[in-house]
Image (tube, rainbow, N blue to C red; front, side, top):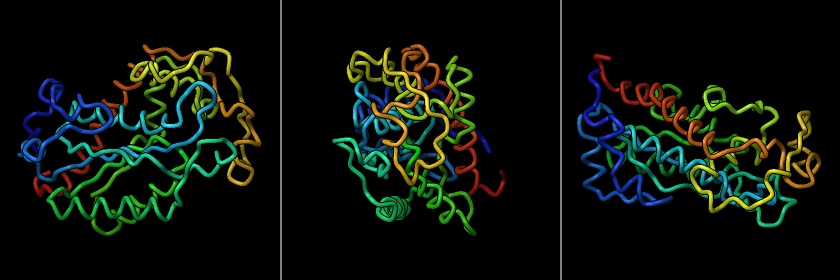
Length: 265
């Protein structure tokens, strides 16, 4: 399949979709133009959470991370950037004030409804950019959507994408140790939203690698502060490199969901 017109970073870097903060700034004409020449139009949906992230990161951390990744994707690829789902499945964080959750059934229904609405308007493929590890149900949504019909939905980033991004960015904490409000999340926010990071993250490191009872006992059984990881190692430079690596990793996902409808692919 020929590369769609306008897939270089230069073509989309000035789009309102990537300059209006968390909410996209597209008009309907922007969406129409961006989908021209594609065998299948693709929407990108950031899915986050509203949950505790220790004393130094905001409750909206996962949503901000998902939006940052989605915006970077929209700057590189001709996708329809959607506003985020800001509340997810954060029941394991319920012991901390401010955390809000919806059920997995509700999140499942919301995503399926969005996908159905997009198809009615001619956008056939949907990529979920997940910023919260506890949104397990998103994997089931993708499985059910693609079973027997082909790849019309995808979930990004996979653990492998995070791992390769971690290596490219020089993040020293493993994905196991860097579970929550640690080096990766703090670095991404220092890069994308430094005004949201409170002072003191340099002294909040806490490691709890054995979390086998997390789903039963919740996060409070493993951390008093809410942090599991090493935020002291974070930097804005690492955040910038993480975002660049993840954007590169999106390429095969884009190819998969766009070429599925092309008989010559």
